[in-house]
Image 1 (cartoon, rainbow, N blue to C red):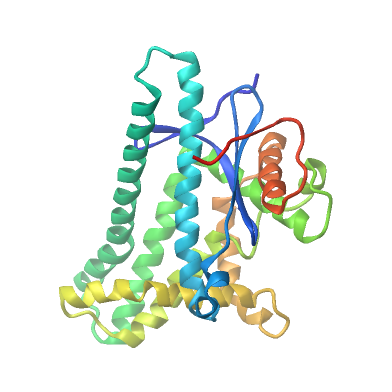
Image 2: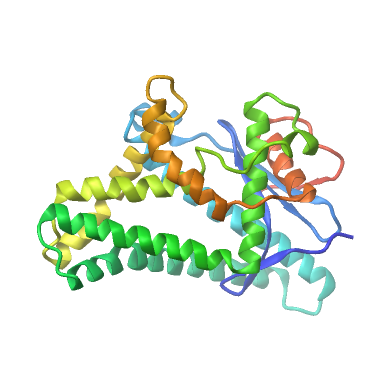
Length: 311
C-alpha cells in the first residue's frame, strides 16, 4: 500500500498529481492510496488552432494563458473527485455521493474565485498602494518602483509557501513534470531511470513565465503611465492579456537560434527561481508524471493505471 498524499484546497481534499498537455490531448494522473494511478484523458484542441487569428503572435499567449488556467482548475477538480471517492471507501456513512460531489465543486469554485481575487489584490493593488506611500512620481519612476514591489511580494510569497510541507510535495511533482518533459524532448525512453538523469530546471516552465510577466509588466505599464484614479488602476487589468502575450513570445524565443540570447536573458532569473518552485522528485512521483505524459501523447502505459471516464 502506498501512503496517501493529500492537500487541502478550501477544505476540500485533493490527491497530488500531474497534468500534461499535448497538441491533441490533456491528461491528468494522480496516485491512489492502493498504489495504482488514476488517469483522466480528454481530447483538447487549443483555440489558437481552431481559429487562425487567435494563433497569431502576441494573441496566442493570452489565449494559452486562459486555457492553461481552465485546464488547471479541471485537473484540480478531478484530483478532488478521486480523493472524495477514496474517502467514501473508508467512511461510507457520509452523505450521498451526489451531494458530496456538488459540495466539492462549489467549494472548489469558491476557492478559485477567492484565490483570483487575492492574487489581483496582492500582486496588483498592494504594490500600487506601497508605491504611492513612498511618494514615487513620474510615469517611469512610479512603474519601476511599483514593479519592484510586485516582484518583491512575489518572491516573498514563493519563499513562504515553500516552507509549507504540503507545498514542498507539490514542488516535487513539479520537478517530476520537468524531468519527464526533458526526457521526451531529448527523445529518450519515457522511463523512470531515463527521466531521473535530468535536472528539474526547465526554461519554459510556468515559474519562468510568471517572472517574465513581472518584468514585462514594468515596461508595459511605463507606456501606460502613472494611474491617477481608481479607473486607471482597473484599466491596468485590461493589459494583462497584452503582457501575457508578450511574455509568451519571449519564452518562445528561448528555443529559436536567432532569438535565443534574448530568451535566455529573460528566462535566466526564472531558472534560478525554480530552485524554490521545483524539488527533486522520488521514483513514484516521476512514474505519475510519465504516465500523464504518455497518455497525453497517445502512448501505451503500464498495467498500474485506472482510466477514469469524463463526466
